[in-house]
Amino acid sequence: MIIKIRDAMNDISRDKTKKKLSELQFRVTQQSATERPFSHEGFEEDTKLFECVCCDSILFKIENKFESGSGWPSFWSPFSAEAITEHKDESYGMVRTEVKCSNCNAHLGHVFEDGPEPTGLRYCINGAALNGKK
Image (cartoon, rainbow, N blue to C red; front, side, top):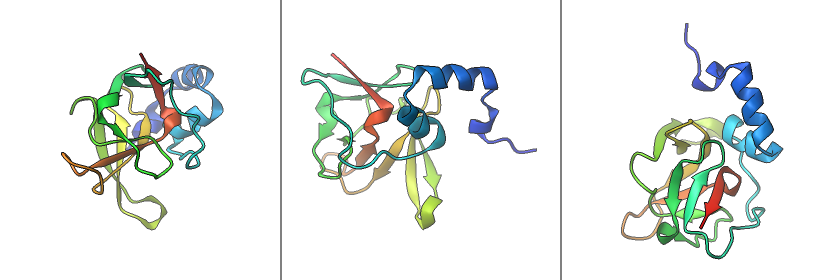
């Protein structure tokens, strides 16, 4: 029997996570939804780190953030290679690379190969999946 990771979350964990998050945060991180572009209000000006809204793991840092014009927070690199995992995503008739929190498996967004140097990558992340930290 094959069990999807998301389906393996027991009802107690799902209820606890759902109570901690807003409806949008839950839909984004647990159901792989996407917030509307340009809908996130942004982060405080002195934000230095970006954490997972579900488990508080550090995912990105301000030095790697850039303005892509896409309508979602964008980074050219994660905080560390261990911070995230990448998975093939064939939903909506496209082939993309999904980005998840390596600690709790929360959906964060996608990574594309159209970013700036030095990596050439654009981690296009739902703002609802992140908490900014000073």
